Length: 108
Image (cartoon, rainbow, N blue to C red; front, side):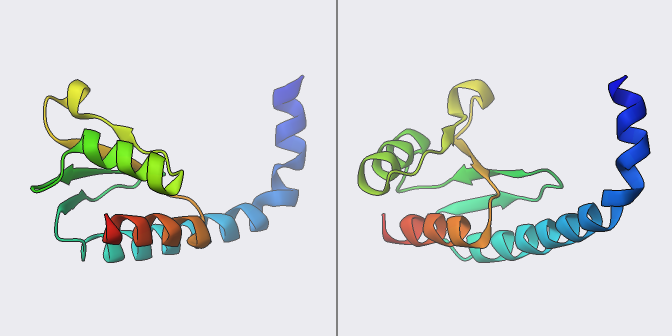
């Protein structure tokens, strides 16, 4: 069965998995730190692979989502309808992708 196979190979990849998790945690921490410098975002801390951010004036989640998609081909999730508040969800990716998003957020 699949479960037996996973148990058999788990030890083989444990070190790689731990290294990947450490890299991810470091990037998430860096990403949060840099995002907090963007004046119209309030970052809600997270242990997940995404962040929820409140969008403050003069921007709206919808306007940000549209501009980032049209001007930078970056897709972000507008959560304002579901949350009944001005929130967006940002995926935490690798450093290169995160830096692209940060740059786009700073110039909109």
